[in-house]
Length: 256
Length: 285
Image (cartoon, rainbow over all chains, first blue to last red; front, side):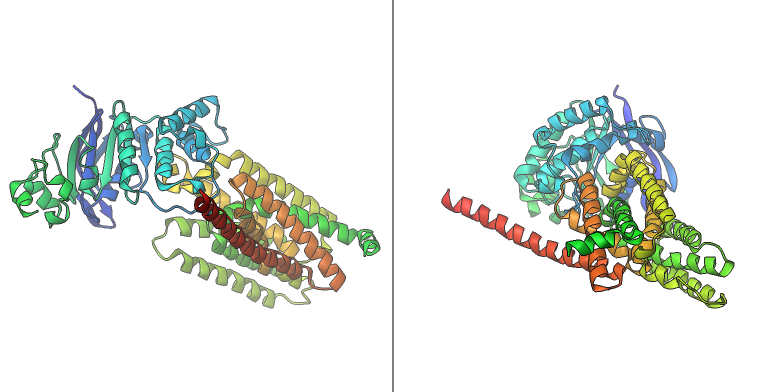
């Protein structure tokens, strides 16, 4: 029996008085590799904010490693959405990855030799150790994404949560990022959030569809109902490289 | 020329002025770096102008206006810091209103104060040529305080400037640290006010850091280079104002502003030159 790493039950959350997430139930087990897909505005980032403790739920509960979000979020390594960050910000690769150690060090306490060892290990895993002294601004998009993954790994997380990890990265480099995530999945639970089913489909072990409500099965079965409840128009979603996959409903594949 | 410089250095006021220029440049280099990378130049301007309310209060109630300026600047910093981080209203609008109201309070309080206001202009336009020895000591102490804060909290200040959301997920007290940061901006603003005046504070806080930012690879280098540039600008500005009999604060700012313009041109040329190099390499390969 695998351990439950994230347990969300009857969760309602949103902004002001308007709930965006309706009655979400999700249990993430150890070494799961889950893709959460859904249209923009469907509540993906709201759900992430609740899991990361940035937004309080209106109703329901979230448990991380069996504890409250506030103490459980220590076990989460977060890789934010790829945004074109301020290119003028002068910061080196190693300094960015060190930020993953902040939770382990108190205020006024400098990073110690253990932090440096963990940072080195994290950078070696993503194959960026030789570039540790470079300013972040000199890296390519894919290299920068690896640095953010290393920063998350430096927290020594049990769970890795990635928000649109390969949006705006070309597909060859995306493949190498997913290969890396596949390696990491041998010992870390991974949750990927994406609006693009085609991008993540081949790499994840299970898929959840989130559009205000969440439809999730532990195997990779995607029913026609699930897709249609999530997206108004499944045609947008089903890309040519998916048509050969046999669990795409007949009606949908016929139309492609 | 050389003899004139030696002659000028005989005067206490000139030596004090040069030293004051260096002391404020250190604070501006360190704090200005965070102002520039956090893009809070507007808040810094707001803090500087709200401080004028404290100067007015000092005149009205008859205490040292600098004390009033420090109090108002700190209050403005905390207020604007909270507004910037937590309000759902338009933060820049609220900060703009606080800025204007603070300044207006100062003007009305000074209107209400009877008698001749001797050195009022010095708060607006600076009086680097009239810095007493005691103020130099205060500047040195403020430099040490600001240096200590940034040294002790460097890893957190870097993290909240670079990625506040990630810092929150690592349980860093982002809001509290942010208020400490704007608090140090308030202290720096009051200190720099002596040198270039309220109206020009923003220039000395941002221009050296902005120039440095174009040529460095990390935040520490940026602070050091910005401090050195600030010291160079204040000293060149002072000598020019001495020889041509210009207002010292404005001269310092013009030197800094002109250097900023030159640095932009230089960077543009450097980029073009690099691009040409890359083109040549690929052509002959």
